[in-house]
Structures are given as C-alpha cells and as structure tokens.
Image (cartoon, rainbow, N blue to C red):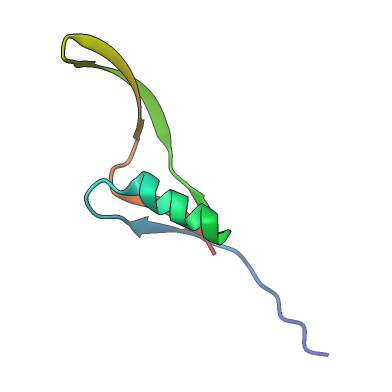
Length: 65
C-alpha cells in the first residue's frame, strides 16, 4: 500500500491593485481555503463618517493548499 500524506500549508498570494476581496470571492467559490486579515476603520467621506472594512496587509491574500 502506498499511502499519500497530504500536508496543507499557508502561502501568501500577491494581489494587484486592491483586489483582495474580489480574489477572496473567487477562491471561496472554488472551495479554496483563504484568509484576509481585516480591520474596521472610520473615514470621512464627503463630510460623513463611514465605517469601512480594510485589509491589514494590502495586496496579500493568504491561501491554504
């Protein structure tokens, strides 16, 4: 018997031009485990406070394969 042992590892995948959430959506659709560390920030937009979810590390999506 040949037993194949699969070990899953986390890799950092570079994403261009602030497309972290778009890539996450695609990976989720394919069933690939991924992670984007995010934080909540409050920014002023047109004299209004807007709560936004932004990545902690821009341009990086962590993928487990």
